[in-house]
Length: 365
Image (cartoon, rainbow, N blue to C red; front, side, top):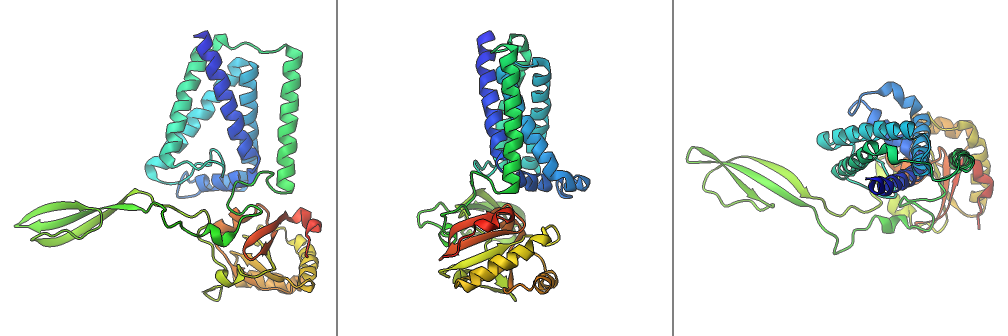
């Protein structure tokens, strides 16, 4: 039992550290995921929505620190009970999401590893079993190093977590796992390979045959049945390939200009997913850098999910020399973790992506 607990302890600790670090790298993205969970259609906890970023930061730092504490063997009672509480909560959450199909991705590993709802639940069940092993054999958890070294590692780990999260909040994630990272071509990301797997659907056809209700199952073809058609039920039994970039449009007056704009040799995108939540003071600096871009021969556009009343008012107030286009809010949140943020593209390829705190680093050549 002692050796089993030792191996499981290291494995679970490393897993918590990795999972926590991935979310620590992108706390804003994790906060968006928490907004989904707190929404009316899921857990119905809207009063928590304003605090999602703070909660996300707290959760990921605790996740990393608990992993470190478990490996080091620090305060085993507190550590094991914290692990149990976290995994029981997450197991309930992933089961709820999977069973009721509420949230399609738990966000357990951020954008680095995408898991289906049932995969997330299975992962948590396995972790629950492992943590129960640790709980049963908790007496075998002993410190790996002396108390002075142990406390030094804990302090350094905590300070590193706080410093790292502060940096990514005021700039951008250090590691970008999304399909809009620098160097990626947006148009290519929307393409589906010719040999990509296609979705498979199961059709349950209901017919009245000689007064009896009968069901015929096919994968799409209309069955040859000597009877009266009543109804059909469709179920996706195998998901098809989904391009990494989807739901990407750049609309104005109901027309999508994405195809033409992504062919621009020099394009600057000013992205503000929701102007009600944007740092509006930054648009004075946005005005200066976009005017500079226009003089350098760049085409500049704004992209927002806010309505024309808000975008027109912002444009007038700051004397912006570019027009705004409509893009889905979720897509804009995915593109850049800054509100506003700025991208520079060359024929659809992202060459620069900056937080509003780093606008002075924009280069227009």
